Length: 501
Image (cartoon, rainbow, N blue to C red; front, top):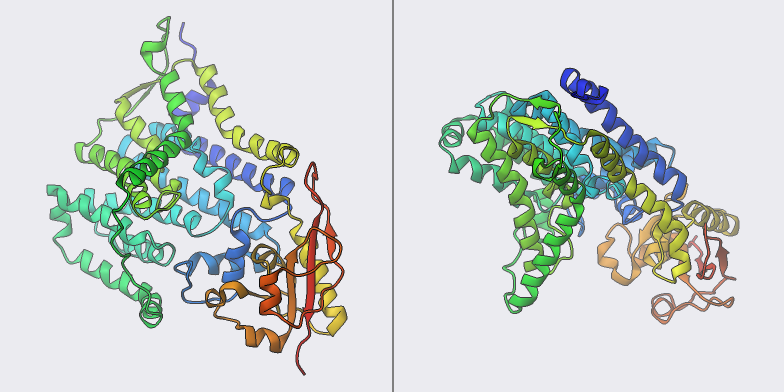
């Protein structure tokens, strides 16, 4: 007797409903995890906010759009990082919405839901998606670009070119990897007969004009700052080492899609001992060009992104794992065939649920276990609000002015930069990276200099003492971590540079 669960019936009858239920639940999960577990911003989020506060057209971190949006979201939430977490999950929703519509165009609604369910198990869309920045913002732009590139190049819809140009321009304003990513749809179009026919019109020319208008301010900044638009040729002096690094990056991509691999293998008919009468999800035959399109964009971004990263000595895939793996689930569905049989339904549901919950469980476990292992410090365990409030209030009580700038330890300075007064962050060790405030301006407006210390004296490190020779250290301030474990208290040495009259 055939057993068909209610979920399978809903996938076949109401695919759009199932899509929104699962993606909203995933977004709610990763909105709740940082709010309940994190006391400090994850990854480089504090640096993103420090740069976004200045609204520079361009910086050494790349194009400005992600930094501007992060600051807008932060201010809209009352100078609380909750707004940035919401923005990150909106990017997640926009990414999978574009993926669902692309998959629905190619394989139909029911199998599009299966593609989305598989892709959601990729770990790049779980905890790393909370760390809003250029890599997170690039994901929805890339997914929407893939959707409209197929509609324009594959199906010849002229109205898709305008949306494609907007997305390409915004992608160029988001990540430095956009230039080589945008070459991939062009290369696919030129390599196919139908693509060449659709590219041989005036629509791509108008799209180029829109892209040029969007990126013109950033292009002007690049010229004035004398920043090279194209990277220099890579040094080919250690071929064996670069090949090994390429293999490591590919292994990390495979590990990130472990959920997709496990679910696919467990649903493989040859591994089922007793042939069961499994429910079937049907689709119309897939166009051959659409099949090639899916395979190309499932493989090319990951292979080329990891290769470029290995050649230039980077430790992660150029463009990010989210871009490299966004088409993974759809590629598996296309390769499966017109009839997708769902075997071992109960087991598949449990494995899928565990793949989604495992990163959240790991985040909770690391918060409890890492302090006892004596390993590295978790940035999410730093009490960011308490640190920012203490130094902002101390400066205002001593000087009668709001805190205008902060310098010293880069990590601590960016955390204080998130406080209510939103002071400028001066990376005094590399002042060229923060052109909005110079050491001379810092001495004029005054501010706080912070550093880490292990004692109760608070003597500043040698490099900070050289850059600020007239510092008078205050009594260090100690802060509690959520779980101290083997780690000592977080002691911060500090000194006030009083503003000039």
